[in-house]
Length: 215
Ligand SMILES: Cc1cc2nc3c(=O)[nH]c(=O)nc-3n(C[C@H](O)[C@H](O)[C@H](O)COP(=O)(O)O)c2cc1C
Image (cartoon, rainbow, N blue to C red; front, side):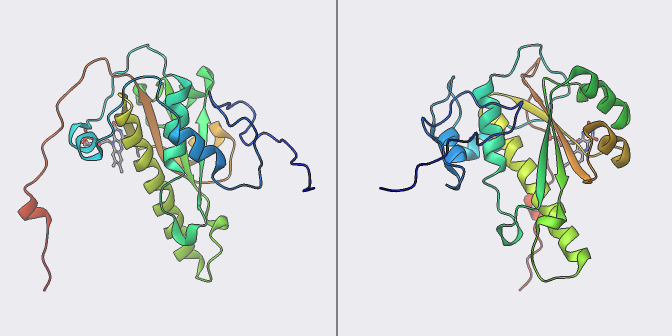
């Protein structure tokens, strides 16, 4: 007879996914992420990655419609599928739920009012997780990249789920850290919700100006 599995919660207090596996073993990696990513959406979603990319447009006006927990779960799980340096996951996600803290974040983010959005995530760098034998400045660089990629994956996931988002890079790092109560430095704030209005994507420069072919 094998050892009895201790059924512990595999998510933090205050964030409870809508659907969870019948039994959960904290020692089994990716169990909850896989379950969330594979579980059916509550609504039709766009599963064509390129269509999602082609349609994505930042939103600064969110409707009051609350975002379903199943969607929030998928956005968080999507972040956790991003590649990270050495797979050390040198980042953390702070899920800001309280209205008071969202208001304080508005102030910390250069008074950008749309930071008070239905769903607010602060992606922070955590270089101490990156156990690679490189100098500190390299580990910090990896942590920025880890946190940024993860937020980018979440942004695309939000779009695929019929939501919209705004990426906030303009903030006072220390003020944001004070609001969320951490000594980890934030890399971006991702604000998500249903857009008041669906807009066309913004123009980009011509690919011929973007790509520099080096032979
Ligand atoms: C690194 C970075 C920092 C940004 N910071 C802000 C910000 O502080 N406030 C804001 O309103 N938008 C911010 N944005 C959103 C950009 O303005 C937006 O992505 C850009 O105008 C392109 O529009 P699109 O996302 O609809 O394609 C930021 C985006 C990035 C990638």
